[in-house]
Structure formats: structure tokens, C-alpha cells
Amino acid sequence: MDALAAMHSMCWVVISGDSPGIYSTCPTLHCGYSSPPLPIAIQCLLSTEAKMVNDCLQPILQQAPHNLHASELLTILSQSDIVHNLFSGQTGNFFPVIIGQPMGIHHTKELALSSLKGFAYPCWQEVPTFWDALVFMIAKGIEELLLDAPNHKGGACTVPTMLPETSLTSEDSLSPALPVTSTPTVNNPTSSATGSYKVSETRTKLRYHTGVIQSPTPTLVVAPSPIIYTHVCTLCGVIESQFYVSNWVPPPKAAADVLGIHRVKYLEAHSYVQSTVADIVEAYCTSYTDQDFTLSLTQSSLPLAEGFFMWYLFNL
Image: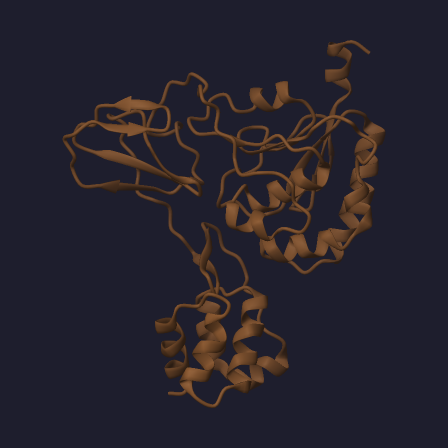
């Protein structure tokens, strides 16, 4: 099969979301670090391969609760041998693209790099297994989530050393998923990840999970950051900012009865993940003093001041 025939035989599987199914071309999906973990598009070389992927993954996700956090979704998928064995006979690597179009898991490096064109700060990775690619897509390349993912061997986002040439404007140069902030006026030149640039009156910063990258276009007019609906938290702190509406999964009724409505509302307002809620409930039920409560949670990296404040709030 020549390259042209291979291109025409490829198709895409979209798992979960509003319109799951098999497509001849990849539909446009919201991309970026703040996009929800699902849906995910997966490129397949043959229609039979696409049907196999669809038949394996869709039933698992249909049975899962809605609006799962990325870490909870990874836990569910990691328990399935079917998921781990997908594409197990393939020798080539996989290329998940977080910021690019088509956004999804690509089968060839050439097509993955092609999807980055037009994006000032694309994000992608080359990984050895389909499971690593799936983890990377669900975690959106965020290092904190990747570190906690079961059996993950890949790394964080790869940003090309030579970014694709684009004509940047205030409307289309930045992915809407990238939070942007402005800093006070700076007259000194500053260095960025891709070189040195003179900054005039405004310096824009793009926040990546690996650090802060200066915008290479000093005259770019950047709109304010989109509204953050909630921060997703563990005891370590904020692990994700959500720029979309999502429903928080409340703790089990027994735990909610122990805490009461006001304490549950506090945990909901901070969008603590379910494993963290369980730790807080256990600490609250087994502690007699503020010191007991706080020290038990500091073992999971909660700062002392926050632990004492939480105990005080819970006992008003």
C-alpha cells in the first residue's frame, strides 16, 4: 500500500462525548490543557482497526460515571486488560497531540507534526504504547497528573524548538485553553524559551505546566483570561483549572451525613477529588483535636495553616 492509499484508508474513532463514533476525517474537538479529559479522537490505519477500538473503549466509558476527573478516569481504564492490550502487536510509536488540530492520538509522526501548524505553542509527545498515549491525552500532558498515572512511561509535553511559522493576531494566535496574564511594564529585554525578544509596554506570559514561557510577539494584544469555573484540588493543592462547567461528584451518603451540608459545600466549592474527600472524612472522624486532624492530613501534603483552618471551619 503506497502512502496516498494509506492516507485514504485512515479513519478516526471518537470515544465518548456528544458524538462518539467512527469518522473518515477527524472532527474538530476543543484542545488545550483545560479541555475535559473526554472525548478523545484516535487515528486508525484501517476501518477494521477503528471498529475494534470503538467496540473495546465505548462500552467501558458508557458504564463509567459522567464528568470524571482525569485521575479517576485513568484509574478506571488502568484496571482493564482490554485497554492495555490495544495495539499491543504494533511496533511503531504513538503521537498524542494536546494542542493542535486534529487533536488526538496520531499514528504517524508526520501527521502529528502537521497538526501543530498554525499554533504558536503546540503540545504533543511521542510515546511507545497506546496506553501511554491515552494517559497523555486524558492528563492533558500535565506533569502532576502524569506522575500519578498507573504504568505510564511517557514524559511531559514536547514543544518544537522551531515553532511553525504563523501570522499571529489577537484573535487566532493563541489557543483559548491557554490562560494568559499580563504583568507590569518592563523596559529590559527578556529571554524566552525560543530566543530573546525586546518587550515594549506589555509583557505577556503563557503559563505552561513546565514553567513560564514569554510571548515572542511584543505588540500582541491579549484578551483577559477566560473565566475559571473551578480549581480541582488535592491535599497538595490545585492540580487543574477548569474553564468549563462540570458537575462535582459528591461523597457517598454516609460520608455526607457525617460532614453535614455546609462542610460538603465547602469541599464542593474547592472541587476536591474523591480520594481527597475520603481522606478528609477519615481524618475528621478519627481526630479529637485540631492538631490530630491537621497532622494526619499533612502526611498527604496539606499545609498546616490550611489544616487548622479546615478544622476550625468544620467545627463552627
